[in-house]
Picture 1 (cartoon, rainbow, N blue to C red):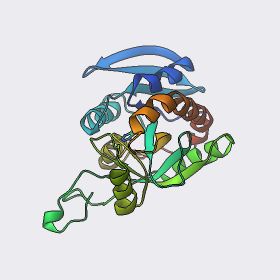
Picture 2: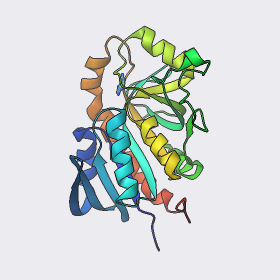
Picture 3: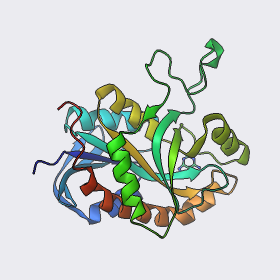
Length: 241
Ligand code: ADE
């Protein structure tokens, strides 16, 4: 069987380490200061990379993944701040939609988050990858999973007011710093994409301390989900087929 080449993008070293433990690595290629690890994961061909923190790093990395490594589908995995009362550290949020919350051209009557002159407001996850992520998370009973909007911006959200505003303004379940930027690059390149985030904090005043405590647990949860999910993505055809 011809499996699609999957790009796995994470933002931090801790997140890559657990993936590398199960990666049958063939080579590592350096581009733009990033190390792209090429190999097989759960028997499927993958390229795994740390993109670094924030939207510019994430966009740069994603375009290299697509243009140079010819990845046919992309998964962004990592941690996020939970938004709203129901979501707790350790839970998983799977994106059905992503928005860049710090894009603000409202002075020209555009809704907050709308990128001017783009054909969409939000970036939708690929339906088949979304279903694969949901099915994979249903195999794990130790934590809850939620499906909804994830918002992205170049800031670590650490105030109850900031978290409330993102939850209410965007109807978002989680906030992080890369997902919608990766989704944007995938959108313009017609590459299927999904973002899976494990909650490390509640984006409130204790967020930086919870982040330190819960990130190892959150990273482990996300990696179990990835193991379950990758084989379920086989049916997703390349966008250009
Ligand atoms: N990633 C994990 N927690 C976060 C937060 N509170 N804000 C932004 N990105 C995050």
